[in-house]
Structure formats: C-alpha cells, structure tokens
Length: 156
Image (cartoon, rainbow, N blue to C red; front, side, top):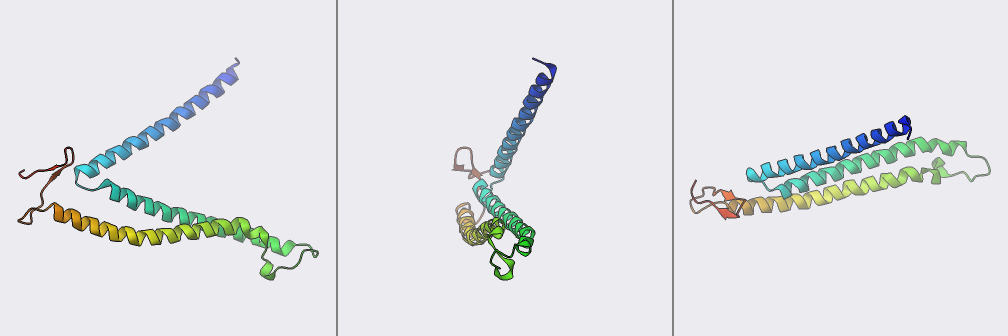
C-alpha cells in the first residue's frame, strides 16, 4: 500500500472519529441537561416540547426563505423565452416550481408551529396548575418530590 493511500485512509478514520466523538458529546450534554432539570424540579418533557416547536418554526422560516430566493432567482427566465413559447402572464411558468415547492412547505411548517403552539401553551398551563396543586400540602407549602423513588418528602 502506498503512502498516499495510507494518509487518505487515516484522514478518513480521523474525520470519522471526530464525527462520532461529537455525537457522543451531544448525547452527554443532553443527559446532563436532563438530569439538572429533574434535580431542580422541572419536567424535561415540557422543555423538549418547547424546543421542538421552536425548531419547527426555524425550519419553516428557513425553508420559506429558500423558496423565495429560488423564485427570485428563477423569475428572469420568463423574460428570455423564445417567441414560440406561449407568453405567460407576468412571465410566470413552470420554471418557478423549484421555488414554489419549498415556499409552500415553509408556510406549512410555520402554520403548524402556530397551530401546535396554542395547544401546547394551553396544555402547559394545565400541567403547571396540576403540578403546583399536587406539590402542596394542606398548609399551602410546597412539598419536595424525590424523583429517584417517586415519593414525596414530608420533612426536610
């Protein structure tokens, strides 16, 4: 095996190790964040749902903007058509489809964010009221909850 082939193989192996190491680091950070949320009494499922919905909005905005950019870039094609091609109104035509499709998908993602966001906000308010009511004892004091064994601590 020549030295060049060996260098290329070691380079790919090194890049793969960096990639897998990054994935392991992300999983570890996610685990630590989840354990800290539980330790401080927050529900990690609610936080994950909020993070997911923000990701849907971000993806929708990016996809929609890519569609607009593609449509703006492809629109001048309508001005360069030969005379044999039927003249389309406003120089619109099938060459705009690569921009219209991501634009429509982006609008659908943005719409789903706003539809899901209102329901998630209502559910979160109900859950926080239920949790705050169930964590109080008769005198109105907050009773700590031990997440390790699922029992309530009556005394500190």
